[in-house]
Figure 1: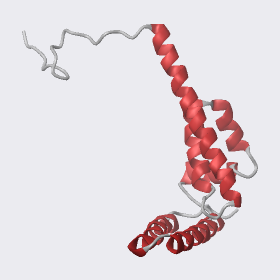
Figure 2 (figure 1 turned 45 degrees about the vertical axis):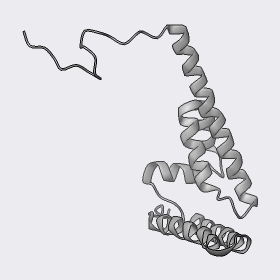
Figure 3 (figure 1 turned 120 degrees about the vertical axis):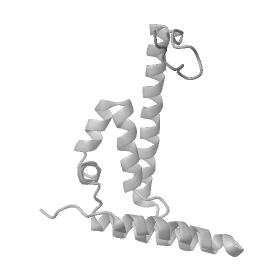
Length: 149
C-alpha cells in the first residue's frame, strides 16, 4: 500500500473542518458587499476625476468594473452599458486598449498633479510625483489603442 505525501504538513486522512452553510453564505454575502463598496468608491473617484486634475478617470472606472464584476452583476451591467464609462471599459476588457484621447487626458492630468506635487513638496521629495507619473505615463502610452471604426 503506497501512501500519499501529506498535504500542508498534516496526514492525508485528516480533512479540514467543514464550514457551516450559514457561515459560508454570510461570508459570501459580506465579500460581495465589500466588492460592491469598493466598486462604488472607485466609481466615485472616477467621477471626481472628471473634474479634478489630480484624479484620473479611466483607471478608477476600470477598477470599478473589476469590483462590480465580483460583487454586483447588475452594477457591472449598468457600468458596461453606460454611454460615458462603458466604451473604455469594454475596450479594456476585450483588447486591453486605451483610447488616444484618454491617454492625452491622463498624461495632462498627471502632469498637472506632478507639477503641483513638485511645487508643494520640499527637496528631493518634489521629484517623486514627476517620477511616478512618468512611469505610469510610459506604461499607459505602451498600451494599444482601440481600432478605429
